[in-house]
Image 1 (cartoon, one colour):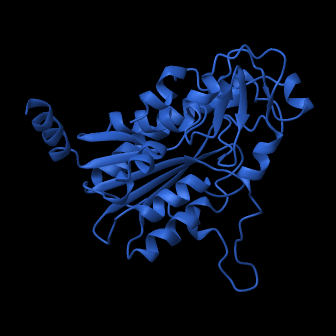
Image 2 (cartoon, helix red, strand yellow):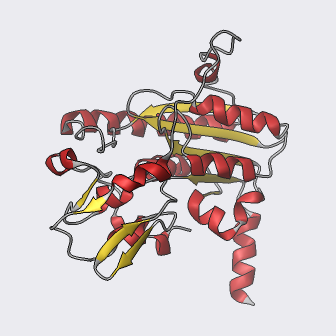
Length: 276
């Protein structure tokens, strides 16, 4: 009975759950830093919550959603997760969008989903982090990455303080998006499952299967010593960024570009068996 009692006692004293989705560790680092400043908080990987069917029920007073911006909006898995949440008008919901250029319409998307549930975003934040879209261009210079890390550390403290106090903040990020009939925000076309057809492993691949294990949605299957991509890709690029041999390519150009993952996050933290 002791393990059950311990589990229940943990749940009883948790009043803030921070859900995160990440491919390179940026969202995990942000979530971890925010959690340090919020008593009785815990982290939950969005992919793990959806896989276990526990994303539909909220048992805390406050809920955070931390995510990267994909093509100006929410990652599709984050959108599915947000729609599955059981929240109401009494739940304090906060969101943190991390991005290379801008939050786009991601926070507006999340606000609309909350509104459909009779709730709303109580606070919303945008954080610039090192851009990790290595299917389009190389990583940003190291000095620029360090500046982003310094800003993130300071911002995480402010976010934690805001959430702990139950304050409202950052909603101007949503209000900036024009909702007029003539120019409503519309998410650009985004079909990550189709885009996955462009991934391949080159001659450097040694069959280690890190890509299979790190994919949060089980989209990679090893056929012998060769990874094969299915049609459930989320475009998190975890497979590409964490491959020890840099053997995974999206196009001919990616073989010439470096890779990025947050230096304070280890690959073992993102393997599916570690994400809870």
